[in-house]
Length: 134
Image (tube, rainbow, N blue to C red; front, side, top):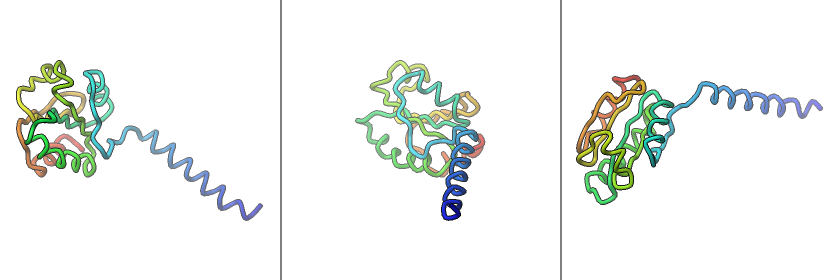
């Protein structure tokens, strides 16, 4: 039985670590989240402290240019990144006054705090995210 003791200790430690991660709650995902409805966006904004919403279109050249930047932001910061296809979610785009793409809306504490239109520099986006706490 002594051979199994280290395995049991490791197993118990892993279980504690996983439970602790779940309880600490809602770390932002390292990849962008696809948003399909107003409810999806509301849920993300409520769940994560800081959310960068990327309103984009598949046919949009500048949207394709900024896509790798927002993916890096998702992986490198504590902010959640939400991707919203304006063609598939026209009412949601209208709700946030999106008239051109890409439009980035930054949410902090459940509220829309910044809106940026056009391609943005990664450093500027990271600075804005850090300004609001992530």
